[in-house]
Amino acid sequence: MTKLEELYAFIDERSNDKDISPVQLDIYKKAEEILIMEDVAVRVAKAVEAELSGIRRPITLVVDYVPNGKVRVRPVHETTMDDYVLPIHMEGNAEEATQDNQTGTYLESDVNVVSEAEPIVRKKTVSVGFSVTIDGAEFRGKDAKETFFLALKHIGLRRILDDVEAHGVKHKVESEKVGVVWHTLFRYSKGNNIGSSPQEEVDNLYIYKGLSNDVKVDDIIKLCNFYRLNATIEWDNGVVQTSNITEEVNTPDDINEKATEPILITNHNMNDSEKHDLRITVDGVSFKEKNAIQTFISALQHIGLDNVAKVGIICSGYNLVDTRKRTDGTRKWQQQVDGKWIYIYFSNPTKCKYLLQIANNLHKEIRIEAI
Image (tube, rainbow, N blue to C red; front, side):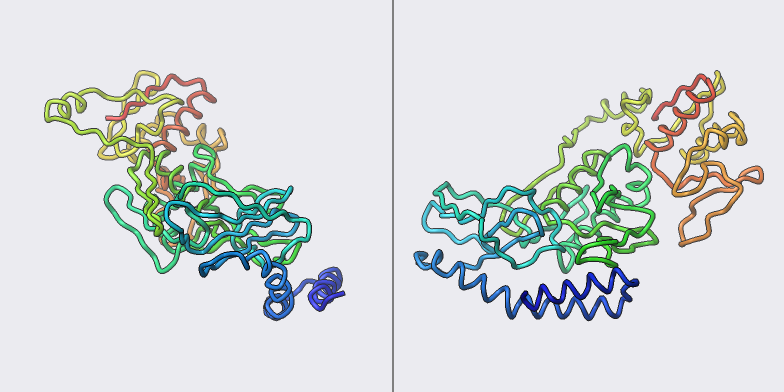
């Protein structure tokens, strides 16, 4: 048994007896890191030395490994010879890793080394950074995680959470799926990461950080497509990605014409209400206040706040119409109306979704227009 295996056996024995404290966990992590670098990494270097001896230029490789997963070897920087590269990669049979916080430096004996010539393709990898531009606002943090967080904050953490079932940007953690922005902190309950979390608290919410850079960018693109935001991702290796939103150039006549034509909102086009005021008609009675929030509240009052409460729409642990006031953080989560607290901190598409749900549940005739 190697020293690393002895360490894991010791940790398993302790975790079965009682919970491991954060201090103990930190000590185990440091010991694991030392053993990996002094033992495993040395054996990996010896194993691949013969395979690399035929390469005539300097190259830096990174080994991506997750227990019971595929092993991948990739260059940190793509250096090339003329118009072709000879990529070396590892192929295995298990699922590919997606979380860069679980990367190790192991090498399995049954992994096949494959070399193949192909035209140069600038590929984005976990180690390549990127910048994000959303509707003209540019974001670049000190690292990819900070850039990712800045982009999500610009899109709006609260609305990303409230709309999670609609946009579907979630990630699997053990047996659960959590949104990229979530309302609770998840901690691993088993494995080498026991006690740690793949999330980080930001503005009283929790952003999923345990993602490769590729997945971070995919999440940004998906969210920008959902909210109809123009996004451009510029990778440090030259690759450029954009959201699938085409910016329309309107003439003054087009603008005036569109201003007089409200958009009828249904279950299939709720995103079209974003950045618009709303006009809501319930059972023939129309409401149009100074902003979408007040129009939303007026419609709920007409339906009856007690009736709305019985529908049971839950917003971050609170009923849409609740007797309780949410007091955490600095946001204005709710507005007090007629002795009740109405949850208001979400996007127009979410307002429309809830109104349609309420109308369907209470058998109300409703018409929602984006104007």
